[in-house]
Length: 453
Image 1: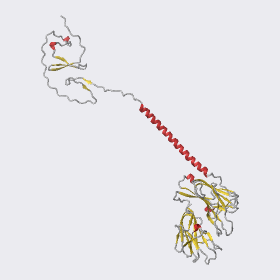
Image 2: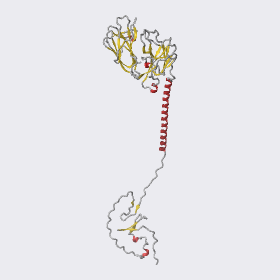
Image 3: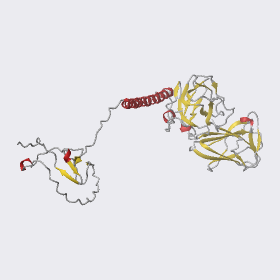
Image 4: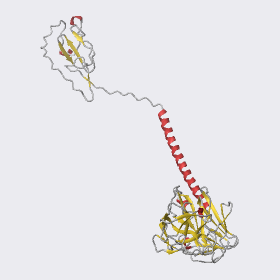
């Protein structure tokens, strides 16, 4: 976990002039800051919901007893907790803020006894549950009273305003256990450490993750003059992302207090996975019972399995829809290919109908074709034709009016007549040298008339 224990040498802690550094193997990370100057201030800004200040309290053999005031967000200062004893008290809790809003806060520490040596070792901070780390992970906090936590054995519900959600679970019977399942990576178990000045019984418990190697709780070095709240009892090593289960088991008939669990998980997980364990907001009053259980909640593995099965079902439906669409598209293309491969019948040849107009007197030997739309053809002005001269008398028998339509074929003597071709049923022309004579359409001509003598 990032920034759960803030050592005294952290660069975000601001010391005013008058502070010195020291340390021993009994202090956290072998470092400590101390001062004998009254008014030498320490400030630290953090984002979270709880903070405690730990230090080394000297023995009562010192001539001046150290004292200091603490303030959060510039509220009314509070005096230091504890009193000196016959020996030095290491990792002694000076101050606890109590439950704060999950937001940004500023802690101020100011020594008030001039000449008294005050040592500051580290800060314990409960970080914001809404915080997203630089690695793209976030912290999820689950209260001990949440139904996802399963208890077995003899457990008692207890409460204090300094506990998270003002609730805690207490057990002193050997063999009592509590288990918590989650989906994420590492996990930390928080609890309460009782005042050892009234009881020499330190909490004793064994922690295991995924039925791995048991880890015993390492308590704060005695004596401890005050009750500590929201203290990390156990931190797991880095674990791969997935479902995990942490188990707490009491031992030696010594007390153990469980307050809450905090674990890491990626910030971009689906909401169905993120909300598997959710903290409860309701507080409970202290009650005693033989055992308190989780209340028949589904395991995280079952929920995660259901989510994965749902995702697989959605992917299968998407694949089926795509396969059906592709099959229809291929079928449509196949039909189009068959249609294009067919040999189409030849297009019937059609000809426009032409209308042949009869020759007129100004168009000799030409056919006038009707075109839609008709194209106007300029007609030249006809030249004046002299009146025909009377034909010379032809020797031969005279014709009577009844034989007006009789026709004699031309002879060599009458070769000045020339029948022009082509002669159509519509009209025919006789061209005589020097003149043009139009004949009426040919009619049925009777055989040549012969006059009987």
